[in-house]
Image (cartoon, rainbow, N blue to C red; front, side):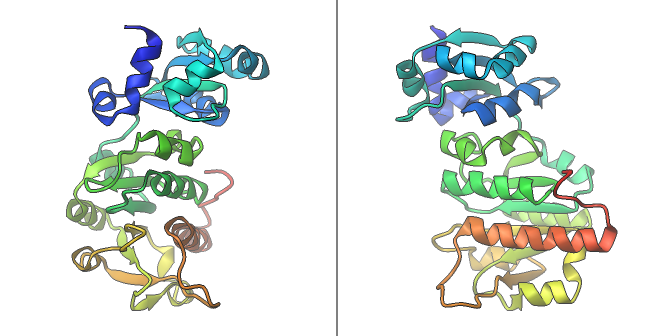
Length: 274
């Protein structure tokens, strides 16, 4: 089987799972893949590049070769076929799976965690992962009812953040909540109909402790049985006339609220150095 055909098959989840490989497209994602590790090995396995991109991003291509990755020159049409995008960015990496066991996430005593429960849209999942990374979260958990972490749209939406922080996948939401609580983490459900207000949580100093945020499906939010698992159900206050916030925006507000409170409480969490 040609390298091109093998890479193209990774657009399908069953082949990704079988090979434990996924596609990362674009210079930012590939740059992060070059320096990332997966199970003690370099994350990047193969790199497809156009001639133009190889010249423009020579540092990335050289670094990829230095890790032992196989480098293939290909046309823009081939990259479009492999990535199944209309306008490929000239660099496409085939990478090893990166996810971490949930037990390892807990053993690291996380201070800030994003839990995606029933998040089905890959763009939303990737964007929340990016928000969590930007806010300096210690980990992200995707429950068993959420989208595949390695869906190409999710990887693209993360803009390289998939390579930055531990992500546990396939964890039942009840197990996720129980494990985090046993690890000393307060679990908050983010919901527009929550009884508690994010501003009130901040003013009372309750966000300075280790916190996990539960985020649900953008269309219907968190089901009642999931909200019931949390220590509190918190809404982001709407001070203007907007009906609501989308999932990624609400997640960013909640995660940055916790990050700010934790820095103030402990003086050790920095979004610029995370």
